[in-house]
Figure (cartoon, rainbow, N blue to C red):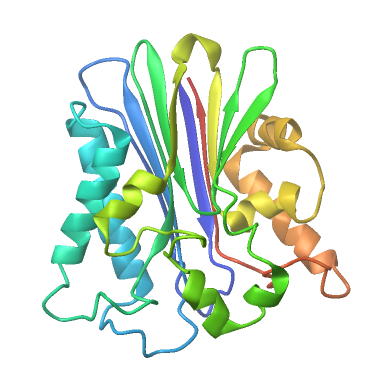
Length: 260
């Protein structure tokens, strides 16, 4: 097995709100990976005394521990329990009903000898590469389906945040776990996995520098940091604001690459 992890802040003057880790239990051939992209609140008043990195560290740590130690739980159940634990850690001090309470996108994968379980919530990506080099992207595209005129308005976007007909993130409600994109793939059909926050996946879905298979090829050859370096170079080369939604020149980026 080969694993590579890399992450970089979008702005060196601000904390990195992405979180990524891999667990390899001693019992055998199994393992799990977790990648989170914290949602930056638009203002300092979002009903919580904790910064977003506090939330992603708590949620990520709970997801890693539960996915590795509680194989009796499905990944949907793992996410629900991790959200519950993290919410309980600040329920007494913070307003968890606030629409901008700390929250994150989620990529979660767990493998054993026979199968790979996966779960994606919101706009981070999980890539499954087959032995012939073809790549299947597991995506939750509900945010991409929100009309651009809605995304241009903070109030209109918040009305669809974690609401039916809108898009969903891991915040304080464990029930959102049941809305994640989840599934199972035979391990024999997969030679590599990659998890990317949207700050890294923009190499494909924003800039069109390559497709998902070419993205995995970059990871195999240049590693996780190599992909982030390519993204940063492309961002610096952009002379004007691209005609894409949710643009910021640099975003926190996180990548996990795993060859099984």
